Length: 388
Image (cartoon, rainbow, N blue to C red; front, side, top):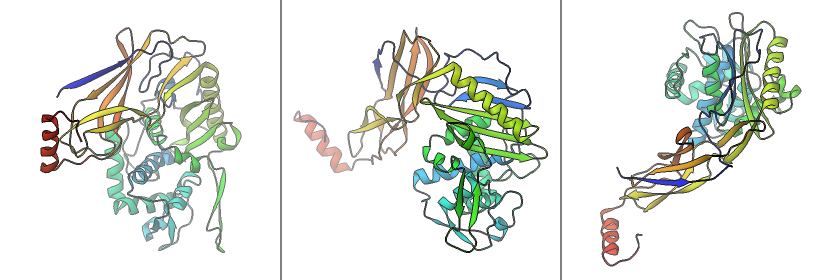
């Protein structure tokens, strides 16, 4: 396939996505009371600190990060709507641990179920949503493991949708950070994970008060998620997200001895990130980059969008001199094309070395052209007219 290379030399204010290389490895001593931990910047994915981050450990209710990710993907693709009704099965209603006390046959909207998962860590709501999306929790768990494989997670295996103790159910701090990074593509999720309190069944006699299990959403400025976890085996865990000074940081702690220690360690990790680093953003997810030619499509071109935020992570005071940006688009792209299909990549480079790369995608569906359309297009070329 012929390829077109479009190169932008942008001088000093260039920004990257993917795994950046600007920040130096942290030598600080953080997460001293955790079994495992990791600290990353969300847009670039750069690791700012880690401790035993690949170790396979029980994730407890941080499992629900993947559950929420699959729900948000289904909403993004139109498979689910926020006002869809979800019925709780006998099995979903029987879940123990943290719950919103669903009754068998009770219906709630997807939005209400999401509040139950994101705020109260409802095991019953997680299973109800899993069954609604996949037909059974077993099928949903297969979706979870398929998504883990797609994301390249090497230290994760799920046995359920909620994180209740189960044999051979594990993840790692590093994998959870990647799940959180992916989930946060869908910024609407923080409308729920950032709530400290809310209510379900508000207009009924069974009004239920939701209180966030992540107390940092109230007590640390900028924290807007994501998910706590606790079992006797996993101890106290938290995947936290904070958005401050235009920079989103993800911090994961696993195996803390108490909730107080868990919150202290997350707080220190966030403090470290915001005191040492800054982010300069170039593109937001969905920004227009250009067009790609379509071969034998109903339209001759498709707009190209950036799939992820494109940013540059810097140590405070660090220069960006000598950084360049290159957009490489497949030319032409064969029809049919679906919205979101990859059509090229955006590279950030320095002195010929690739620092990062970001997938660029088609903005809309383009169907294959009919035989009659192709004939008219050929005729127009023969007489020197433009494509249509």
